[in-house]
Amino acid sequence: MIDTHCHLDEYDNLDEIINHMKDNVMITSGVDMKTNKFVLEVVKHPTIYGTIGLHPENVNDNYEEELRFIEEHINDEKIVGIGEIGLDYHYTKENIELQKEIFKRQLILAQKCHKMVVIHSRDSILDTYTILKELKFKEKVVLHCYSSSLEMAKRFLEFPIMFGIGGVLTFKNEKKLKEIVKVLPLEYLLLETDSPYLTPEPFRGKKNEPYNIYYVACKIAEIKGIKVEEVLKITTENAKRQFDLKPNLW
Image 1 (cartoon, rainbow, N blue to C red):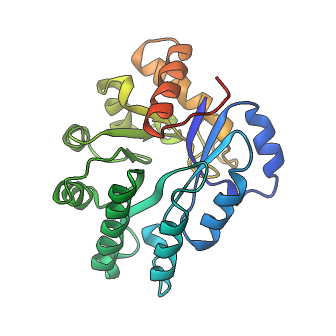
Image 2 (image 1 turned 90 degrees about the horizontal axis):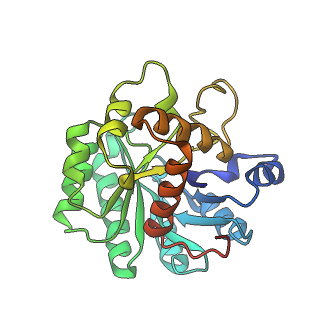
């Protein structure tokens, strides 16, 4: 199994979390200077890879310094992409133009360095699509924690894209994401937790952890009417390909 999106900096019991995953792989995402530095350290563990980026909610007066740091370290060992980057209009609408500028600059850096990107898009899916289109973006893309429509998902298929599917899929009242998972081929899907957030059933109310991607895989298998082993096999291959992983674990 590969948890393609988690935030390992959020744990006080990190050794326990890592041990629970055994030989399964985690890709941890940075969102600002502090967490990006953490990512550079934690990827020294053999089962952990990382992405570094500046999240739209963390844009502040130091963004030039943070962008320089990302550029300086984007080719470090086991840093497999730029992320978590993107647009978020849910809480922070007052700086939309600055968000767009910083998003574009990180996308341009990804093109320059031929790195994939992990995109956060909340209440901003059309602008996310438009910016990728304007830049004629050709590098690999993961839409993290996809929450938009099936119609928009189909539009994004013109890019080398995969969709991160997490614990929200298991929620009883979640219908839109279940329809997307039912319709899209498994080859476009990745397992992720966004842990410690978005804990899946049957553990809602508890702190999420990377191992819980297994329960997401079970839900995908149920929706598609296939065995969970097939989901795990194909999504693992998807992640290895999308993040260009070359671990000595398989």
